[in-house]
Image 1 (cartoon, one colour):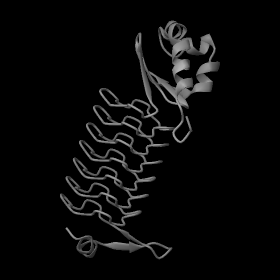
Image 2 (tube, helix red, strand yellow):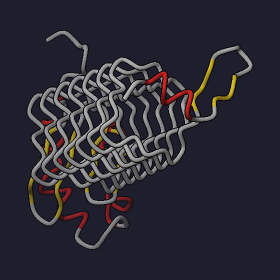
Image 3 (tube, helix red, strand yellow):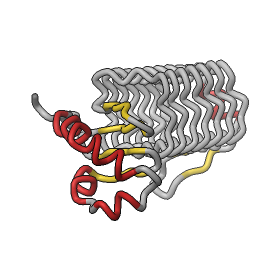
Image 4 (tube, one colour):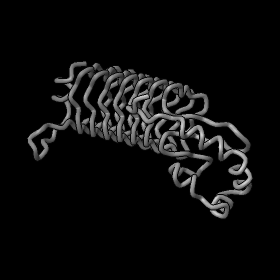
Length: 228
């Protein structure tokens, strides 16, 4: 499907800076070929983009909340600060995509290919990343509270997973998430026994048993872009 025809068939509004922004909210773009399209700031909320080709497109700041992007091709796409809340991205190709600062809270990314993607500073609260491919993905500063990472391939992603006792610890160069507790490494180092004990029943025993190894793992992780 030609991007020019899509723009002609849908309302366009003009921003104050003179730049055009497409209003494609709720549009049926299943299988559309939008490769390389400039849709920066576009409204694609609730759009049907199943199997659409958005490879190398500019979707920076776009509103894709609730959009259906199942098995869509977003490889190499610019999704910086895009709104992807509750978006359906099951099986989507996001290889090398730039999702820095994107809002992916509640998004379904199960089985998606995010290898080499930049997810630095992304909001992944409650996101489903089960069985996702995150090899070499940049997860520095990402918010992973209540995210589902079961079965995800995290090799060389800067995120380590420690299985020990009652909880799983997700560890990056900056933060550690244990259960529903997500704090900076410095905070974890400085929590008092009383503060840990109040987090959950059995938390203090868990922390006393695993603190040393968890902090050792955190200290071994290099931040993305840091030279070895």
